[in-house]
Image (cartoon, rainbow, N blue to C red; front, side):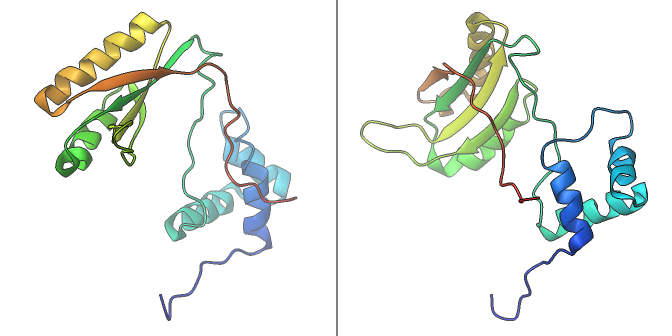
Length: 165
């Protein structure tokens, strides 16, 4: 990576990151609320966030729902044994399903752990999760050589890296 400069942030970028890292305000215009708190224009907040996304300084802006709070009490990580040569292709198909919140590849740990594709599904109960996993199995067909569902037993707080204020 010689000759490649690391992206940098200035004091205003840092203030925007600190203001948003705990979540956006629950208002119809969250970027306007942030701008007002920071004493800058909403357009500047949005442009700086866009620039930081493009530069890889921040990875994403998205919703992280509390599934339990919205009625989804059964949360199952479905784990799949699929051919390594097709894991990317199949992962994209599974990840595009409305019922899958995230899907990713993980290494196998043979002989005890043959699974290389993970897909998280949520349901109001285990029967709903199992029905969604059955849809994934149908999509995979013969490529799905085996699977399990690992159910959540407790809620973990999900946060990324935080900048000190």
